[in-house]
Image 1 (cartoon, helix red, strand yellow):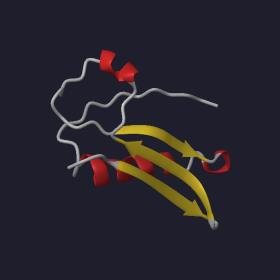
Image 2: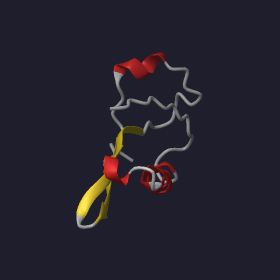
Image 3: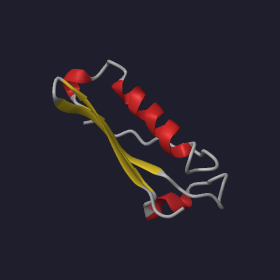
Image 4: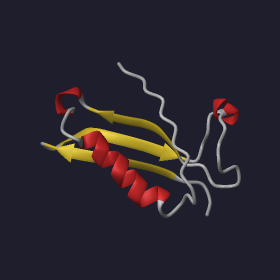
Length: 88
């Protein structure tokens, strides 16, 4: 299996209100992390955003679950999950 790029968008009221972007590209900063699986294929969530007026409705959780179900179960063999939170 080659490179992977995925974006998933949730729409409500005829507009995109939440999005997640995932691919196989890793920042060079990730090499310092102590990955448990050094042989597996990486899949990195680079952005997960919910429009402010739609926050608090579980949309971020839905996106994370959908990403997990569609990508990690089919693409990645193991899960090392690291979270970096950036708030705006």
